[in-house]
Image (cartoon, rainbow over all chains, first blue to last red):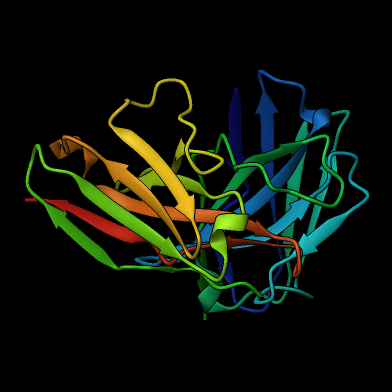
Amino acid sequence: MRLEESGGGVVQSGRSLRLSCAASGFSFKTYSFHWVRQAPGRGLEWLAVISYRGNYQYYGDSVKGRITISRDNSGDRLFLEIHSLRPDDSGVYYCARGSPLADRVFVRALDPWGQGVHVSVSS
Amino acid sequence: SYVVTQTPSVSVAPGQTAKITCGGDDIGDRSVHWFQQRPGQAPILVIHDDKDRPSGIPERFSGSNSANTATLTISGVEAADEADYYCQLWDDNSDHVVFGGGTKLTVL
């Protein structure tokens, strides 16, 4: 089982960014997925979850309205779009596998996680 | 949304037992998961569903959850256990994943 994030880098404040997470080694389409971020020196912050069919998405309060989680089940990929980037969006962004066959309730542990991708927003 | 509280730091000598707690209202009614994160690395799952160990996680790691406190216990602590530990659960009321603020385990 493997998850690999990409699409990070240095971005100017106010711009948008699209992160990608490629999955391999398991049946991508049967699992829900999460995005979690970690600011430098800080704890884990949950951002969003998407159901296994992609028809339900839930967002954390701090980013709701500025991010969109989506998935491509034919290509085994998860995405996160972040709009109106701010310096405090800087950090490491992780994708993580969630509950199997879950639509609205995501009680299972996030496992596994990707290695993370760095995002740095310059002011 | 639901709030969980972790003690920011715990220190223990090698070979001793470390207890890391995650507090919340009636947290015993919820499934709690625990992650270990070493510096510069992604989190890894060490306990799921209150007390179950994933394959490959040493038996030294155990978990419990009752009333208002979930606990991760590490017996016979080793230097390699020095890391940040996070609890996590799903909050049905807010449809949010909730993480504790993390506990830094220092092995003296």
